[in-house]
Length: 136
Image (tube, rainbow, N blue to C red; front, side, top):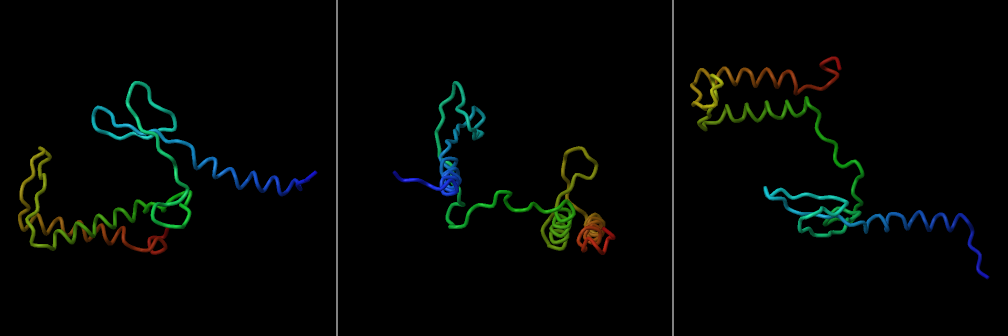
């Protein structure tokens, strides 16, 4: 009679769990508005597809990070927007803005462009610095 050490059995079960989980189906379908949905349970009354779940990112051999990439902070997002605005304002491209809030965009005058450029520079100074430089 073959006897297995309890530690070996526990290790085998632990290693088998991700394999079993990786084969859980995902149901996907497109609603009447053309929006694709994903679910762990099949939808009722609509045609759907069944797909498998992968443990790894497509095209790589590295396991996918459980948390995924860290999203940028709100300050970093504001910094990025301000830099993009400044780059657009420094270009020769014609730019439009809704000056009076009526929903209609109007071309920026040279004065408007200068004022918007100043606001973008202020935002860069406020958001594009190291946190310890702000006292945070």
